[in-house]
Image (tube, rainbow, N blue to C red; front, side, top):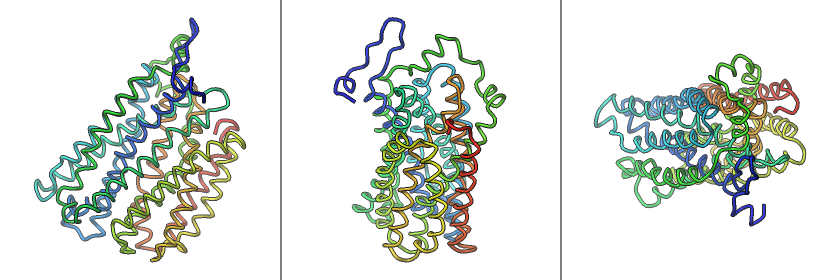
Length: 433
């Protein structure tokens, strides 16, 4: 990317769509997903550290944690609904306006969580309001992710779709780093009692500043060339979701389970591991968060490596090798997840490196099978269906398996997800995944 293309928008020829500069496209996709995932992971961290005591205080510690993880899962069931609604408008009126609306939905829900009264103040209404806000977070993220991936890939030059599609995926590790880092910083300057009293609200309310930044970046870009061409060629359909389920059912099913191992791996290595470290291994909150921060750094490093590898060896080949490696890694869980911080660090390093390789490519892979007229809806629905099957219950399921049968069964759970994903990659049309 040259300085001229980074700083200036490409001048369009008469009759050609206006092009955004590569720098502006990649910044808009990265900043937006960073903010969305920051909001999402702030909740995941709080679900382990503070919500069990503040919103479910009348239960024993394990039941309270499971109840907190149950509210955590609500967002994943809201995400497909958000994918349908925002995907409809993304395929009808454009990617840009829909991305702005999704960002506002997610951000406002997050800020409201930071203002909620607790169980001690309003009783059972507190967890109900928390669940409602979590639904709003999922609804917004359901529309955000697909639009951000398309903003990148539909502006990509030929032969660079894997590289461009990697940038919105970087929002996940950056958001995880910022959310974990903020909680870690708070614990450096305030006692745990203060954090439980009011300090936990700061990360949620701070999201307001990030929303302003995200809106400024998103409003400065133009529509993608692919969507502009769809308008000119009158290719848009009245109800994209109807055409999607009428003509692309196989792509939806295969895409959902192609992403299954990605989601299971991530939430075992983040939300579940955080709770395991704090509740079982008895690692101090700050040390457990430091481990998660390290994981986010490894995650972020390996996403660009995935993009480069896919451009050289092919996206499908890289995903196959990575999924096989995830299956092998699953058998290390009972070996590495023991009361030894060095082994846990090794677990996080290996798991998040694999996560970078699979997550860095999954956005482009899920968008590829769908034509422009239903691509926003199709990629969003498959990604968020995968979230239901792979992520929504992963912290809950892993916690239950570990407490009931032992750590080996957490590994079997991850291995099963990897084998399902591998089968669906092979079943997908060559060149589509």
